[in-house]
Length: 310
Image (cartoon, rainbow, N blue to C red; front, top):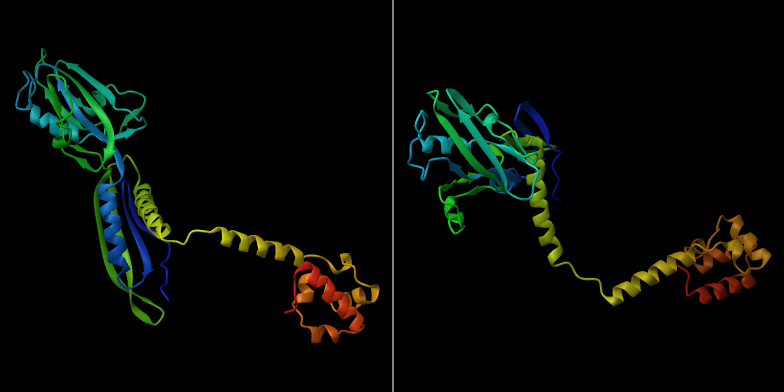
């Protein structure tokens, strides 16, 4: 018989990094579960990222901005590193306006109440002169995994808007390893250890739970697909069984038995119809005080109820 593993536990936790351990996995299930979780963690967890940007005075990504030490490509790469907690269903817009000598960080963006920037200290650009300025507008969206620009090139964009490859997934790194362990007399069971590092928008525990739930939901569809459906016959059978169960709960005291028959049954601790039909005729007839007349009463009552002896 296939045995189930022990519940997962966390054996190491540092900030957004955690190591999960699952013990007593049946032979081969370490790789099966570890690889499945890893693929889901990297591809299927929702997150938010900047999908497009418009920088004042910039027409394309190969431009430079007067008074800004970084070129546009470098700024775009930095924008991709910004990580957001996203509470809206529709895309959100954020703006940035900076003038004078200054180091520009993620915290300089003005965000809506539906968006929260996690890494506010992320460096974006450096303005080197007093007359330098940097103005941009970005669009933040929710999505899954990684989405290259090619998937969105069919969208109509405004002049000067630069589309970005977007990394929506909140997972920075996932590793797993499997080793043998002893369970009882066997030494070939698996111990799975998973290392999960997130970007701070969710915890490793939330990521582990979400990935597991995604897999469970998929397998539930598969397991339910070919189960036999309940027919009318099955429903009638269930009702009949339920009805029978109800009848067996009838008390001996409430049945139309003679006082002698009732006394014979109750003295032997037979208090319900269910107790009667558990016996056979021979054992009932052997009860103290039970005679042929009492047996006839019992048979007649059981026949009316549609029941019979064991």
